[in-house]
Amino acid sequence: MPKAIRLIRHAQSTFNTIHEQTGIDPLHFDAPLSPLGHRQVAAARNALPQFDHELIVVSPFTRAIETAIGLFGVVPSMRIEALARERLSNSCDVGRSPRLLAQQFPGLSFDHLDDPWWHDGERDERDIAVEPEPVFADRVSRFRDWLAARPERAITVVAHGGLLFALTGRPFANCEVFAWEV
Image (cartoon, rainbow, N blue to C red; front, side, top):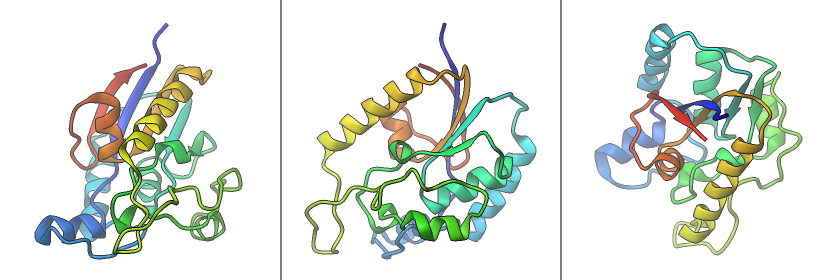
């Protein structure tokens, strides 16, 4: 029996705001939501169809957590999952320690995350460890398998455009909801 999975891309981040205008990485590490991103979350919350979910899976990046909390609040069914993170290719894809995330987002559990939970490898000229495409593809496959193995039948995932594109083959707008089966 297929699972009902709703995929949601995070709202606009401060990184997205500048990168879309300049094409240059503004070095916003673990970028939070921009003012427009907060408005996108509010609009999406008001327009979000009512659906039941047994589990809400959220990437550990601040922009995804802020989006999930803005849409659903801090609820017991929310799980922070490093497999749902974006491919590390820019500064916004460098995370923060679980300890710092726990301080910023009390009520959510981060103690199951490695430190670092993001890709850590050879660094480029920006001092960023870009995640190789085969490593990312393997993680996407492991995430798909992880979702399929979960006992819950109704799951919501709040993640990132690159990850969601790798899962579905389609681009996502900020705060877009897409029904998917695994």
